[in-house]
Length: 77
Picture 1 (cartoon, helix red, strand yellow):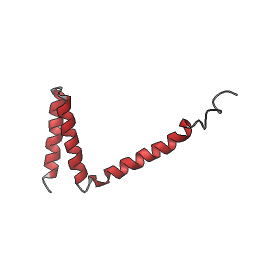
Picture 2 (tube, one colour):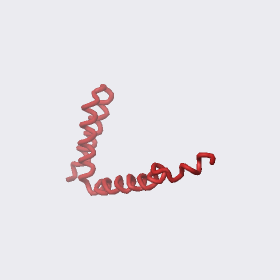
Picture 3 (cartoon, helix red, strand yellow):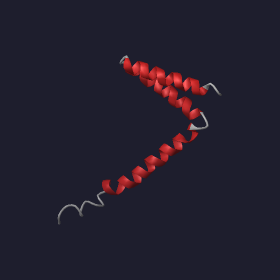
Picture 4 (cartoon, one colour):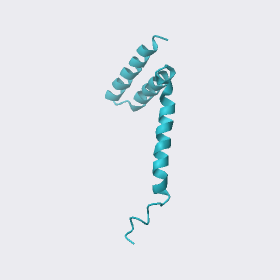
């Protein structure tokens, strides 16, 4: 499991090289593999929960505005 860091480094370098060469699909593939390898490590295991918490907080903050709760306050009536 110690070589996962080296694999992630090679994936990031591959993504940078593909991006510089304007090979978008190659850069996306290298980036996705690097992300999967990072999540497989103990350090990255909390990433899905952190993203879920962020999206949930954003949703809770945006829901009142989307439901029109503040629509009458800004209408000038």
